[in-house]
Amino acid sequence: MATTESLSTLRRTALHTTHHSHKARMVDFGGWDMPVQYRGLIDEHMAVRTGVGVFDVSHMGDIQLRGPNSLAAVQKLLMNDASKLQTGQAHYSAMLYPNGTFVDDVVLHKLGENDFLIVINAGTREKDVRWVRSVLGGMSGVHVMDVSDYYTQIAIQGPKAKDTLQKLTGVDLSAIKNYWFTWGQVCGCHNVLIARTGYTGEDGFEIYIPADEPTSSRVWGEVLAAGEEFGIMPCGLGSRNTLRLESAMALYGHEISDTINVFEANLGRYCKLDKGTDFVGREALQAIVDEGGPTRKLVGLEMVERGIGRDGYPVLDPDGKHIGEVTSGSPAPFLKKNIALAYVPVAFAEMGTEVAVEIRGLPVKAVVVSTPFYKRPRVVAPIITAPLS
Image 1 (cartoon, helix red, strand yellow):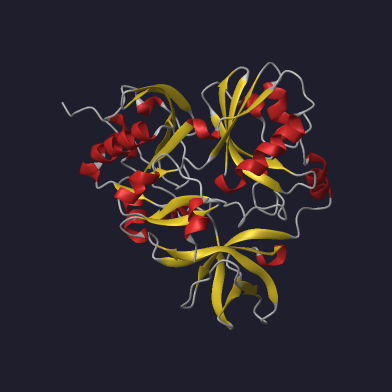
Image 2 (cartoon, rainbow, N blue to C red; image 1 turned 90 degrees about the vertical axis):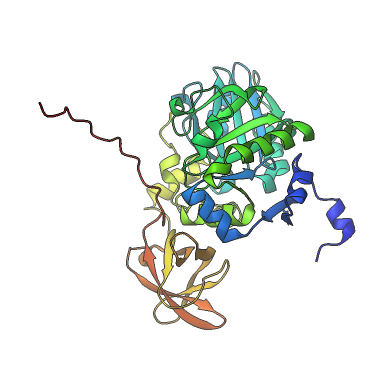
C-alpha cells in the first residue's frame, strides 16, 4: 500500500483535482497519480466501443526536434522512414538500442519541414529524453527540447468521438485522416494540435491544450458536456488497457522492452531497414533477417477452457513443457472472451496451435488466434442510385 509520503512524491497532471471531483480511483502509474477507473472498467470500455469516452493522457511525454538537420536526426533515432511523412502527418515508430531491442515505441508527428514532435510513454519519459540527447548530442543543426509539461493531452475515443469534438471546434474533423493532424481553435483555445490518433482501436482524436489547471478542467468539462447525448464517460487506465489489448496494441514493459527485438514483437512492418539511412539498431536487425528471423514471436491467445491468462503466467506446450509466458491477459469486455498476448517459439506461432496457460499450478487450454482480436467496423458509404423513371 502506498504511504502518504510516497503519494506526495507522485507527479500529477493538470486534471488531477478534476479526477478527484469525479471520484476516480487513483493509482501509481509510472510515478504518476492517475485514474484507473471512474464508474467501472467494463462500463468505460463499452462506452468507447459503442459511443465515446474521454481520457487524460497528459502523463505522456513529448520531445520536439527542430532545425535544418531535424529530419536526419529523426532518421538516425527512429526505425520508421520519416522522409515519407508530409507536414500534418504522423506515424508509429520506435527508438531502439544497438541490439535491436526497444528503448520505447513512439508516435512521430511532422509539424513542419524542420520540425518534429515525438510522443513517448509516461513511464519512460526521463529515460527517453536522456537517450535522445545521447544519440543526437553530437549532431549540429538540431535542437532537442523536452516539451512534455507544456500540454494537457486529452484523448476523445469511440465511434462518436468526431461528433462530440465537432461541437467544440470550427475545424472540419472529417477532413483529418487517420494518423494526420491539424491546428485549430478548440473550446476557445487557439492553435490546439488536433490529431486523429489513439490507443484504443477506435476512431478518435487527441487534443493538446495549455497545461494550466483552469483551462484543462474547463475543456475536460466541455468535452463531457458535448458528449452527453452519446453517453460519454470519463475513462481510466484500466479500460485503456483492455481496449488496447483487444486491439493487440503493444505496451512498453509487456509486449516490448529492452529484452525484446522488433521482429519478435511483430512490428517489422514499421521498421524500414532499406530507408537509405542508418539508424540505431539497424545492423543488429539486419543480422536477424540474414539469420532467418527471430526464434520466438508474439501471438494472440484465446482461452478455450475456463480461466484467465494473466500477465506473467507461463505458457506450456501440450506435454506441459514451459515454452513462453503471457505478456498481457484479461477478459475482453466487448468480445466476451478471455484473451492474452504471449511470446512462444516460432514453431508454436501458427494459427490454431493448441497450448496451455498455467493458472494456479494447473494447465488451462488455449489456442493461438490471429490479431488484433478486435477490429472496428468499417464505415461503408451508402450506394446512391438514380430513382426509377
